Image (cartoon, rainbow, N blue to C red):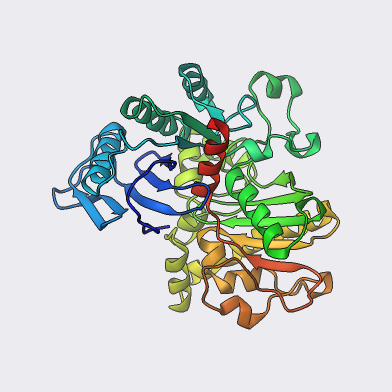
Length: 410
């Protein structure tokens, strides 16, 4: 959500949700009970050289949008400046009586699979888990440390992306590698985007007026990062991401599934070491590697302009997506609902239609008018009376984190 909603003054009973990335901090101040967003914003380009006129913080609050311009050397400075914008807008977070601060943490390993009140020991353990998520956990830890320093009297809660997939069946979570090595190094399929998959699957049950325990669901979280999940009776039974967020679907800059022999091949033939291969697979692959763009809107514009590289990238993206949909249909023994969410899933009617094209014999179809109708609401896009409900459900990870934090701190 880019702008504040229900901008009544005051922040008592609100939860501040913080999502810290390697060069950014996204935040929302919201009431978990009503879902009202009081303020939101983003700190961008942290640690990057920028001009004095470059907007690096955009804050949406009770009195409109305010900005900070100029370089931000580190996450602590970025968070402190964001708090100053809150104060200028009429909300001093230090004295506001916040209910809690909720932090998105990418990897909880085998240790954290529920929302967890943050202590010094918890921070240290999340930091140790950086071996499993070297691109994500370190900035998550930085955000937690700075937020605790700025708000020492407010309870803070970590909510883990991997938690929803902690209970995957053994057959789904186990890699077929040396079992002793896997056990010694914590190697299993953990899954990611779990907060989104859990939230969206719950909303699907609400939209359909069905008991979650009676539903077989496929949820497709399609953004710059992309993942799919198979959910039976409200519990995840499979997901596309694995030990890291690199496995699975084609993404904006990540390759998704590859033959691991490619890494050895590049080491032999291109003198590319493991770190260089990992960097390529994470930052210069996927749509970026195939078409030179990682934004789906830019990809679609390039396709319309006749760019053959863009067309191939799109076809590879759809092919991989359909492969997972097919696998999960078999794993679940059919589906009651297939749901698209996140930036691409919510905003690309063409992709939704192409992903499910030709599946009418499985009871799966997309109604053209419903699919292309402009709406930001959760909605059905399958024909009336279809055997399988196809939906678009906007995800709201911030609300899910806020509610989890509020429940935990009572």
